[in-house]
Length: 347
Ligand code: SAH
Image 1 (cartoon, rainbow, N blue to C red):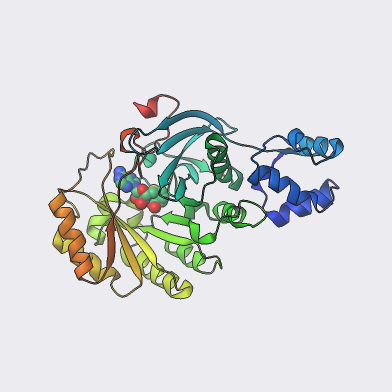
Image 2: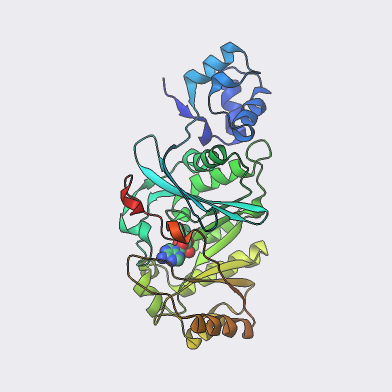
């Protein structure tokens, strides 16, 4: 029998499958979702309001495939927790739990490895292996909630991989996160971060949910961006920004641009002015990120350069902030997640 991962199902598909394929009564769907997404019970036999027969049928047909926790590191600085999970086929992904006042954010992976190979990002170094299923994306979140006995209230697709290159599974995972019968997470609390795949950004603009879009720009010109993001050879910076503009106009939502600051590369006042020019005619905000430890050996600019960059953007009328680093002692920040087997990635 073909055993399915129940976490791959959105609400409607699950209800249909349970009633039509295995003959459960309709209202059972809500009960099962409640056990999994609210009570974090991952064994059908523990779902005590179901009959023994139903529990057995479910066990025969489905797995509740929560990724296996291989390793966990907790930051002494701010409690940020980095997880290494193993999937059913032995591949591993990392996820991060970040604490803010009144908010818990899960940074989750959408692919095993990444095909984009950005110079500054550790994930690309180990190549691309495969897309995650929607259930594997959701599984990371449930595993973290169960481990910490808390509710995550923000999800960012900023772990490993390029979410827009795994579009269908990412969208299905968002439906599951957002569904009032499933994870019940407001769409505004979900952020997709992309290196910029223009036609996929436009496709996302048609998607009616209020999710947030974050675009990793990292440079103000093609000449600079080509050097650090190979994907820019395929889609120019103008194409990316144009797609963002369409997205912004169609959804009436502000787009966030992520901009890594790299010493001596993209950190001057002139760079800031070019950036302001590029995105000045749309509703946008800029997240400045002094670069974290990275495989290319790039360094952070000095405080002074960061301040001038920020100030220049603000004076040009662009909303901008410098993002605070989290989990610095455990290398849990953006782009520091690495796909390696147990032990090696934490040296
Ligand atoms: N592929 C998607 C999401 C994964 S990367 C994207 O490109 O947006 C999540 C974020 O981490 C991106 O903004 C990425 O550019 C950033 N990042 C990667 N390496 C980094 C590093 N060494 N320092 C700071 N940010 C980094």
